[in-house]
Each structure stands twice: as C-alpha cells, then as structure tokens.
Length: 215
Image (cartoon, rainbow, N blue to C red; front, side, top):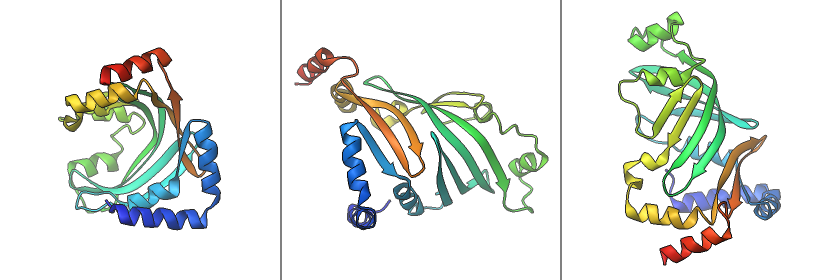
C-alpha cells in the first residue's frame, strides 16, 4: 500500500485535473453520499505489491455494479480472472458488517497452456460451472471465515468475522457510530463508486441512547 504522503500527493494532482470533483463531493455530502472516483481505485490497485498480489488489475463500471479483472495465481496456475460484482444489500451494526453480493459473468482463463495442474485441467475441459461461483466456493476445503454464505451467484461476506475486529473496542465503536450513520447501499455510475449513507437508521432516540451508553 502507498504511504499517506503518496496518497495525498496523488489526490491533490487528481483534483487539479478534475476540479469538478469538488463540486460533486459537496453535492454528494448534502445527499448523504460518498463518491469514490474509479480512477482512484485503479491507482490503488496498481500499487498492490507482493508475490501473491493480483497483477494487471482493471476496473470498470457496469452500473449499478463494477467489473474487475486481474491476473492471479490460483493453485499454482496463472489465471486471468474477471467478474462483474453487484452489492445487493449492506447491513452494518455492532453485530455484523455484512455485504450481500452477486457475482456475474465470471471467467477464468488459463494463461499457460503448458500447465497441467488440476485446476488448469478443469478450466480447459469446461468442467467447472462458472455461472455459479458460490457453489464452487462451497467445495473449497477451507474457505475464508468472512465468507458466511455462498450459493449460486450469491456470496455473503461478514467483515465482523475478521479476528482483528473481534474485540470489545471495535464493538463499542460500531455500537456508537452505526446508530448515527450507516451504509445504505453501494453502486456505480460510469466514473464513480457511490456509497449511500443513512443518518439515524434506527431513529434519533436510539442514536442518543447509543451516545449515552458509550459515554
């Protein structure tokens, strides 16, 4: 990941070239929306480092979803993977950080035709049903703890299952923040990833009680 100085420098340069983003941000703030330029996501993705990091990442909007592709190493097989992702529902509170997504148009192309590994063989033969990525994940011997449901083209991710987030401090922070503001939905337009927010989702009284409990 780039350091803060590099991020701030890149953001400043982007805003100089796209001053209209400032007006858009102000308009979004009034409507409880945060818009992240897809160009910013591409910039961050291009700086992913490490032997296991995806390479040649491409991101494009397919409103209301996003299509991403990358070169990855899967079970010793170099693969060009691509999929369109739609976020159907978001539920953020002290108990869960849940994202329900649909994965469509999944494609996995083996880049090394000489590779004779088991995954390469399955992909080349067409034996895998890529239209149901959730079912494929279900056959994994060990899947990530954050993946709580997987069926058909539907995946459910709960970030609260991450060990680093399973502590009293995080739970108190979520119990304080989510009654005041939470994420309502995630979608795209041709140039942005938009995060819609909801203020006082459980009512003003509950938000006040949450602050009282925290204090």
